Image (cartoon, rainbow, N blue to C red; front, side, top):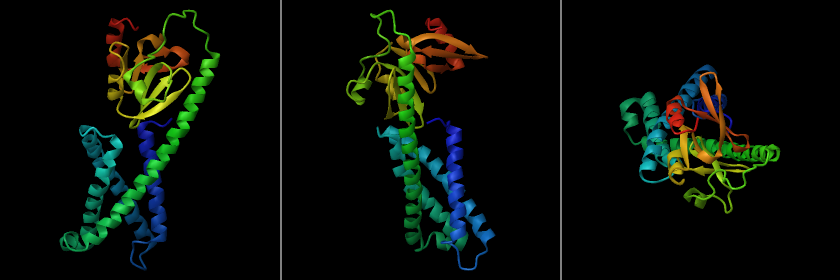
Length: 265
């Protein structure tokens, strides 16, 4: 996944806007004879507002899921019905006031908003799943290319990366030594010299499954194996670690002094 978090949010917003325009053109939820401009205004405001609401409720749901020991994706099982109820109340209140929002009509509108919200969730799930699958293939090919061009190590006794850990139990059999862990949305990408895998878990949980002292979280989105570091370089005020096989990892400014004191830099 090459898009950052902000870019992913903007991409989601673009998809929501496109669907809102399509719904306005078709007009399935508007009374006959409603002008196109009115339909478009209500569709854009309604869909964007609903998307923002689901996003906010999903943050609460993801936190609840983590507290219960579940994957973050289960947060949407909480977010979809709750946010859909809020959307249904808002729609009924705007069209019929308090009596409509708290009346019997809610029982028929809420299931419809649940279906729409679930449809959006399924759409984005498929989009992100395909993007992660594509990124996995590209990353694997990139790692393979780097391994072919990298010079062989002259120190055969030195183990590069973490070859055995509790995290390996969650990876495919014979997964090679782990060089680094990186965050991609709700996933952790496990990077080795010639391949990578995606795991649905927080970075902190993945780092806890590595042997004590084997590495360090050097950035909010990166954990690095100490033995995989071959050097570092400066880019302006920023420092980046150079890893075996050509990987380059950013170092947060807050971690520069601790890493220097620990002999990494």
